[in-house]
Length: 196
Length: 380
Image (cartoon, rainbow over all chains, first blue to last red; front, side, top):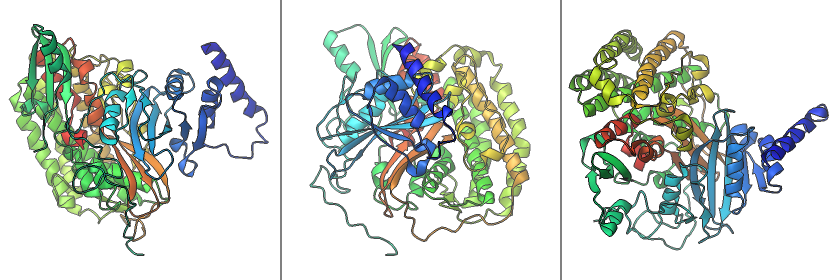
């Protein structure tokens, strides 16, 4: 199985070289990484983006079910070798259909490249743990559980890490107020725009 | 009163099974935990069988604060993260926010940023060496290191007015140019500092007690270090030649020449040697900055209100402790939508369990010292 993957990725890498002059359209950042993922898991990359086409900001949105497989593949494949899970965090968008984004910031020392994976989930939905792929995910997943209330299935030791056990709510959610304790109904704060 | 101590998994297990193993608490007031860190150790005789860290005593919700104030207002808060090397944190934040824009930062500002960044690395490594040696029982090193650290803090005071939390940089450059006296005093410091590093080494490097306490203790392989996400001098001590100043250069580092030192065995002694060599390399970098320092303005033209376009960026720098990064989501307003701090101390401390299991209880103190943590940044 790994041999097939290698061959596929080589083929796809060779293909653009053959008709290089016709390659007037700029390839989006992370296109080669996408090919590596898609060769093993077709259709795994749901969305692809990068801030101002910066190669370091290449971002893939992947599905909840495929995140562990995609992570393992990206860690082990010779063209990617994302052995370092730099950061694992979440963002809360209370008004979105899938209000939580879980982000995996990967780094490959061998290739000096970065890649960001994103998974969008619904309120109350549990994430599969990646602590079996990178041990460093252990504490970071505990932190997300603590501050956002996202559960990680299969985590070896899912407890609060920064806040006391009896805290009862999750402060990094947007509906957690700056004063007082506990979550409230979220109203988008009116920002005072200086200079407007 | 909200500070209820977390029940430990280890405590629960040992009461359930009635084992003979001894559970002891180290901290949170223990001096060798370098802050308010509580380590719960399960011992079989003198060997550590299991370990659990209880952190969060210094949690101030810095990320939440960052989401509710402007980009410029957050700079002083970054000082309070890794307060041992405050200018490094400022540098991480300003370079991260500047990634949103295509400003051309003046070279004079970039050189001063690199120079002050290296001074803060010296300040941080000196405090590490002082306390690490003190933990293992060497009192003189502590006094000598603080003597030089005092000189670095005086330099910060000359340039920025602050000693510990300096609020050194601004978005787009510096607040104002550094005084000539700062450059002159820095040159004087750089002239004497290499001989002072030699002095520390005469006390430790070939010291028999030091070797016995640090060699082949707390070994971590390169593969394990990557798996645990360890960064900075720890991963370099395990032989991985990787430094963000080289891999993803920022400030004036593309124009500066320095060596990235690495160890071989990944034990405490190698981490010690790596940091000592980094002190020397920092001295070299500062000398180059002083020699090459261009004239001109120290700040570029920036808008009065900083409003990055919508989007998300991740940017990190080589902090003295490891990779220190910021992930920022902008929604196009004056306040960030999400600020995530990538804390090297937090993630490096996550590797403590792997480093300590099977070691002697007395070595736990040495291993914590060799990781070099700051709880302010670990707990945020």
